[in-house]
Image (tube, rainbow, N blue to C red; front, side, top):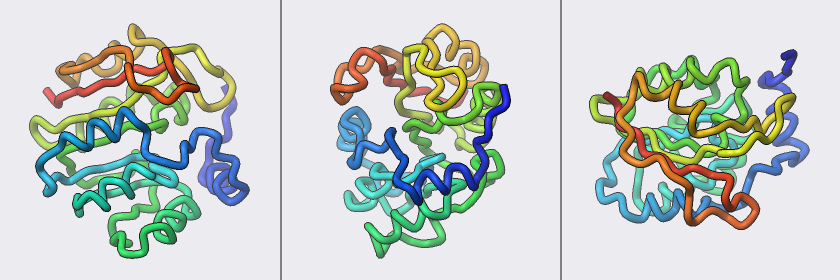
Length: 195
């Protein structure tokens, strides 16, 4: 599969506002999860975060150790414009696979479905590597075929288990009950703990 998912392609999509995956707000399932978090000191990563309404929401709720990594400089600048006091040092202009910090919590929101599907196993390994002991990977995955020649790339729970089972304990992995209407019945909510 010859896919151009380079930095310039993603950056251009943000420059031209070709961001159909961007809800313009924090996704309801993640908002519900964030609202029950008590420890504001958690070091949190949002990979491939894009405009990252999730990072903005967490930051405004008092979580000050929120990091966003994205290959698009424009997407990171968009966060900075919306949230001027968001620390620039926590907006990482980098390829996720080159990230080398460690985190308590990593949030998955439309990043997994945007990378080339042949990187999925590498994604699971990298997540395991970035998380501290007993760290959590939490978020949403599409449970539908979607596209096979461009993002978003879909998949199934059965497929995802093969990538994550060797590295994580599955605390929650079920159909999402509070998706936005356009994604109803097509999302899985998960909470995986580093094993």
